[in-house]
Amino acid sequence: MKPLAPVDPRTRIALGVAFFIVFFAVWAAATFGGFVSKTFLADPVTMVRSGWTLLTEHGFLHDIGMTVWRVLGGFLIAAALAVPLGVLMGAYKPVEAFFEPFVSFARYLPASAFIPLLILWAGIGEAQKLAVIFIGSFFQLVLMIAVSVGNTRRDLVEAAYTLGALDRGVVARVLLPSSAPEIAETLRMVLGWAWTYVIVAELIGASSGIGHMITDSQALMATDQIIFGIIVIGLIGLVTDLAFKAGNRKLFPWAQLR
Image (cartoon, rainbow, N blue to C red; front, top):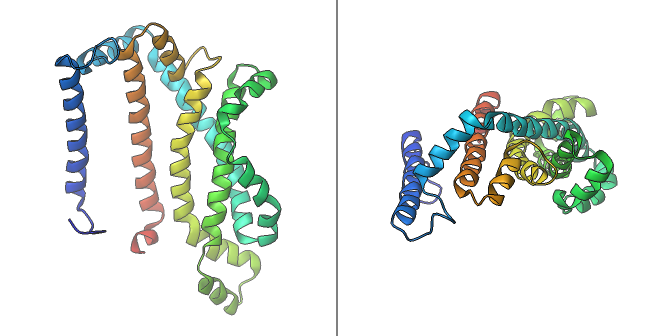
């Protein structure tokens, strides 16, 4: 191995799969070997059986669908507002000077701290859960996108002005194409954070969703169901992450040449 030396795709996949094999082997050894009580950590076989029961007999697919809908709904609302504002802040310094202090302040506020207020304002319905995801995603997106746009190479901007481009043309034909790959990566990362916010929102005042199932399972000390719910979240996140990466490579091929 050498620092920053690339790994071919087949080796990368093999190494990634190998980690999961080792992880489940250690888990199985710890539970089947009696090193950890099954009351506190269910074994992999029991977890799979309980997960199948949840899916086939207890309507867990509906819970999964509700959670995915909440994540995508809240995240898309946040992205629809954060992307244009972040681009404006990155492109125009007076806009950045106006919004940046408040955005920097707000992004440190934990979304979970707003849950009591949001329950008072919006009840325990879907609006409250979407608002939690919005608060947790919006301010992070705005600041990261503004930084990406603001880091555009100055020589590209100066070359565009030299060729006669107007301000609007510089934004549309230089700043956006240059920062688009980083904006897409920002969206990918923050979507992962949105999953943490929705689970927290579902732990309080929810009647459906993966977080709701985990809360009910905790009351019954059903660690097999809790672990299955956590693994489902991880699998959905992994699939969306891989889809984002594939989409980014296809949409922004020039980014791979950097």
